[in-house]
Structure formats: C-alpha cells, structure tokens
Image 1 (tube, rainbow, N blue to C red):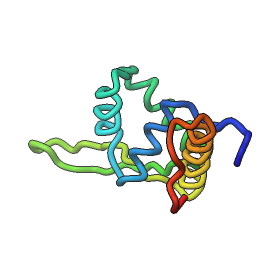
Image 2 (cartoon, rainbow, N blue to C red; image 1 turned 45 degrees about the horizontal axis):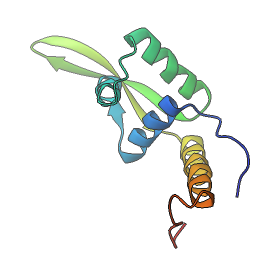
Image 3 (tube, rainbow, N blue to C red; image 1 turned 135 degrees about the horizontal axis):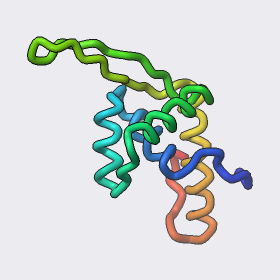
Length: 110
C-alpha cells in the first residue's frame, strides 16, 4: 500500500487513461476531455501534452494526411512505458484509499 500521493494531476490521469485504451490524436483527446467539461485552449492542452512527453509518460508524433486536397499535420499520442507504470501506481493508490475507506472492495486480481 503506497502512501505517496500520485505525481500526476486529475487531468493528466484522464489523458493517460485514454491513451491506455489506444493511440489517439490530440484532437480526439480534447474532444474526450470536453465530455468531462474540460475545455482548455488548444495551446494549454498541447503544453500539458508536451510536459507528459518530457516526463516520458507519453510519446507524440505528427501524422500527415490529405483532407480535401489539403495536407494536414495532426499530433498523435500513445502511452509510454513510464506512463503505464505511473497510471498503474495512480490506480493502485486510489484503489487502496477507497478500499481503506470501505467504499469499494479490492478486486481479488489486484
């Protein structure tokens, strides 16, 4: 049972959770965050993603496509190895807290 607080914010947690499911574009991540009422500006979002990349939690690259004859560069992301560890540690921390508070029962496979 870890007593250390997770090093990521709730917003970063949501992004890492989404990336754990699949590689995705920044545009799609912003749309997912909007479903939670998070409507940060594009610069603020991409600054956060840059920090996740610098921390080694996410990998980013540009994907170029042609849409209606226009070349479009789109930033895409995937969860990095350190991001998987951080996500697992964060999940474990909160599951332990909820279990200790008797809010949930700890799954037998955890």
